[in-house]
Image (cartoon, rainbow, N blue to C red; front, top):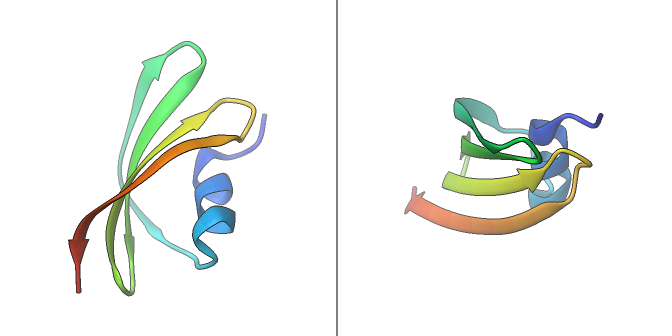
Length: 59
């Protein structure tokens, strides 16, 4: 199974720092990740597909 954070990093094009990780269902995970340009909320399926990407805070 691909890493959820790695899938999100690939989508954003940067390496982030994980703030929280919460399994939403058996097939998905919610991540909050800090990047140099802000904080993001990400939903990613366990197969590595990012299903949503939302900026929570910009720096």
